[in-house]
Image (tube, rainbow, N blue to C red; front, side, top):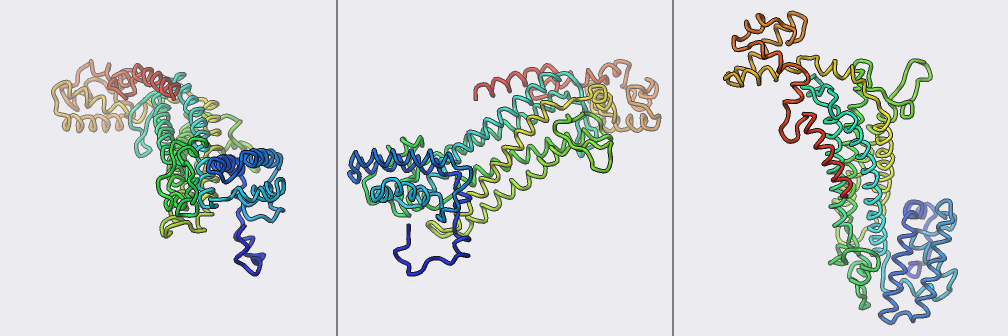
Length: 457
């Protein structure tokens, strides 16, 4: 493709170092689609006759079928990259006519176009998998909209919530990830084809029509930028990394809740493994792998950042490394999303244990403070009084609500018998009625709203 300037072939070691066919092979169908669109534009400006355009288009369809039949990248061909392979296969079928296809274009604008086409499909696929996981989370919230569980800050018992409220917290995170992917698509959805190596093509190609034929929203506006920048991939990677972090948090929660010390959930046999030595073990390997792979996905974002940070305009061969980062992150997140959905669908909450732990740890101390505020006690004083009540309950070895009224009144005389009504678990949950709160009524509303948003998407 570029040998005319050179007297010697590349060294075998350098060729292995330079060739990218094993990596960029997954762009092959996108490369062929871009080539078909380019042939049509070459016909429109008179470079190709109608017959030549039809023959090249038919030949490219044959190459597409051949590529589809291959079980692995054809590295044995010795060709440098996917673009070289497609052109070689076309020339094999059409002879000299196949060599006319590359008129007016460069691998620089072609690879950027192919990569954007792939990234567009990646966004759509990951959003579908996100939707599957979000639906599983909403279904979990459906089943447990009113069932209590403990919530934590600093991994210490804080206040009770419902299981449905906990589940919908993750749905909110995942919904934002899906929205970020949709937003990133606006930057992905530009067509660089026709920008040439860096200065634009010398042929009067209708780049708006070309972009439309490939399904892009618009052509890119600057040839130097379009041929060389990869911030569209960087943005998609940033969203994949954020999503992976959310999945890692979900995994960490369930790993902790599944431990014998917490005992709030039981993970399915489908997503756990055993020990080769200890017969009693049931290990949360699926969740631990999600947690581990989050680091791998996040590091891919850092890898691409470093790849781009000091590149002068325009294209540099550094950018051959861009695809591996996004391909790997996308593949790993895809698996994590699907495993997470399976985990959520099959995990069982121990409702009795959840209720017991939601009532423990003096999680209703805030309710006592709020009760005193309603009696006219300033919140800061009420907060201190509630803390003294916790101390008294700890000394007595019982929960606050099990202390006799006399003991509570020694803490503060404003406490009366009606305090016991507000200290129950049901009262604690029901009181959180402000929008976004854990009151079961609000959880039912939030669950319905989440499902409606997902259905609309």
